[in-house]
Image (cartoon, rainbow over all chains, first blue to last red; front, top):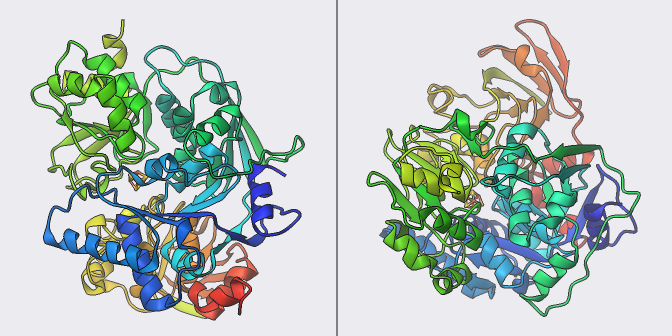
Length: 418
Length: 164
Ligand code: SF4
């Protein structure tokens, strides 16, 4: 069995499971954010009407809001707080950072466990050797909250093996975007994607994290990286709660093995209107932008902030560009302060925002008018997620986003790196 | 379970954001229903009738996993959705709220807007009354047919958790 099959077997009290089978498994962690949490809470209290069985496994994080912009939103957050209090679940209020980062930083995500969440990027936690996937409100309210369980169909697995070294100016984020373009939107519907190969295992944990993040956008159910010493050391540095990591058997079977060598890749840009329109930078460079952002679950890591600083040292943000910086958690902001990056980027003309999810879905910031364009490290660029449905969104690495902020148009970061 | 209705056809990769716009998710159903799939077909929200059948391309309902997209489709009272393929969260949410979905690769080439379709959910048999064409959807897992019969996940949750 592969890692996911083993985790699902253990969590459902079976010796073995096979792809296609439906199992009912114990869930170790449920992550909710301020929007999905509200919808789930309503179903739980209005339709399910039962006690919360394992409140210690449920974590709610306010991340689309870092501060309510109007009364309606203030009321929504109040209702979420009331729900959290009534049922004794963990609550991380405005300003803590985005769901997934807060979950990881606080030790809720441990190798070998089952993690679910309503955010569709929940598979991101496969990075730490979890079986992690997004479910809908009714699963969370109907079986996870009252029984600590959920149903799963065991997915077929595809192994994605990456080898090579990326060139200077190219980052793991570029490799990830290229993968989405290559596999295609819906190119791996329902599969479990195992990311492996020397390229992946040489990366640090926060860089690996970008790979399982994309699985939803190619339609997969989950993505994962088998835990190694780096994973274990990383999780041990965050929590002393015990965990029991799982790796796949030598003879695990895969529906397919996709092998790619990435050494020749150029920086990649995802163009409007959807996540599948990925092009090498040369094909997109020159498009004017008015907004740039490091944020969303794809960015705002300390790695991203360092890359922005690398480009902006001794340079300024173009006068027509607003460059928003959104740390993914308080811990990241602390680190940026220690490294002097907060001042450097502030002086260069960028604007710091509180730790949150940033302008993803423009709940709290980052709406655009019809003729405006943004380049960001977000996970998604579907029309209408940032204000006008006619506004455009490009996705790129932090290096490319920062280079574009300097130039006022989509720009190749290699011009600024020498 | 047999459904007969008028076909509304949509393209590939329709995200949940186009089924229910993000700025609508906390609005009452009466508001939401005025805009369902509106950016894909402006006539749909006003003209869709109970029992109509939505036929979509690949990866229908991709992006966010919010059940509200599936719930909104159910609120329009369409009888079922047939797609070349579904995003997995949409597929899961559909059955969990008691909304029948069928996967039928190749279907979009065989039907047009306005055709009358007849669909048998359990067997997956689809008939286009206009052209006389007959098609077979992929079989629906028995577990999900069970959930549909129960009226959705919440109705069968105890049984599922082994506590019923
Ligand atoms: S795109 Fe990112 S910020 Fe937005 S909901 Fe998904 S994970 Fe969260």
